[in-house]
Amino acid sequence: MIKRTILASVIRAIHTKPVILITGARQVGKSTLCAQLAKEYAYHYVSLDNLREREMAINDPELFLQMYEPPLIIDEVQYAPKLLDVIESIVNERKFHEEDNKGMYVLTGSQAFSLMAGVSESLAGRVQILEMSPLSLREIRALPEEPFVVDPIRNQERAKENPVDANFLAEQIVKGFYPELYANPLLDSETFYSDYVRTYIERDVSQLIRLNDKLKFQRFMEVLASLTGQELVVNNLAKALGVSSNTISSWLSALIAGDIVYLLEPYHERSVLKRVVRRPKLFFTDTGLAAYLARISNAQTLKNSLFWGHFVETYMVNEIIKSYKNHNKKTNFYYYRDADQKEIDLVMLDGGVLHFVECKAGVSFNKDAVSAFKTLAKNTQYEVGDSAVVCLTNTLYSIDKKIYALPVGII
Image (cartoon, rainbow, N blue to C red; front, side, top):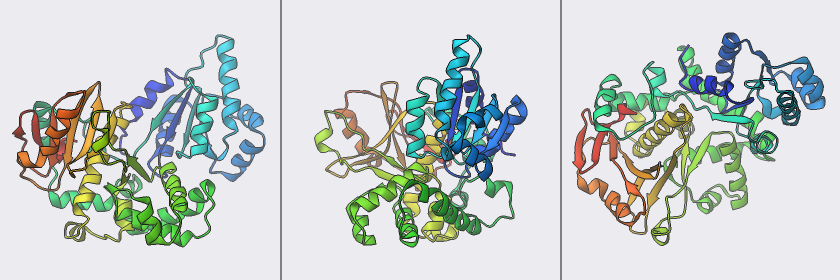
């Protein structure tokens, strides 16, 4: 079993909060993580994937929570959101009687909007929300993982322990990072993703939105996959698919709720607001799923395609964000593009300091590749710290003052 970095954050949470909610896409490993918790920390476990348990939780949540007493793990809690109100009353009652209420409930669920709204209303101040991602490469290789920082001294050692070349990277991107693909080496990735998409549309999307044309929705996912790492223009998608912009927005909301895609918002502050592009960039949370939907079947096809640069960027941005989510560390992520088409793939605002990151499939870069760094640095109100081009170089080197080329293996 692959050790998950986020487990340490879950264990800390059960000692500090009454309720822990672990969210994330289907099959990222939430149930496996909870099974480990149940074994090591004596939690009772119930899954609402079981239709009989789900029916009881929906129809009589009080009886359900009398039958399954804390400490309790409830898997797939989004199927019975009424449980949240009852959990609130149980947690509050224990606190009223001055009893220890830490770690009473561990809940898992997809990031359905209704679930998150229910948590915000019923369990505000009582719940720790942790976002679980697909595997990181460091988890797959059983290497220590820490939040990404641009630190040339520390990163030189980290790159040596995690070598990544173009061929290996392309293979990883196409395979993707869902745990089942690594737990079962005989599992064909195309079969896995075919089943994944069908199950997701049939079970998850249909609960979130009214879906009249499942084939067209899958076509929508395929078109989006070809746009990962690029700006999202809703009107263009609507024209390409022959549906309204409102329909595209509804479909997109379902993909975001299911943690299939996410939007990276453009960086802006008052000093640069008039110059920046306002549209977000879209990323698939898993490159393997995006490759399957874009009909990229192998590493060589990817490397020879027009998608290569955008898929490399998607991989790098995903791995950087995973490194923060896995440690439950909050940092603000953006991208930057201005009216002169100067772009920065990732802008990180951490502790009042900006860091700029370019994500590239090449090896050798000079000051021209980071001209946008200076443009934004001149206009920002924040301090600008070390910045980087993360790329396929084997060795770290300096591009300019406080700007470095970093091997992708440092993430």
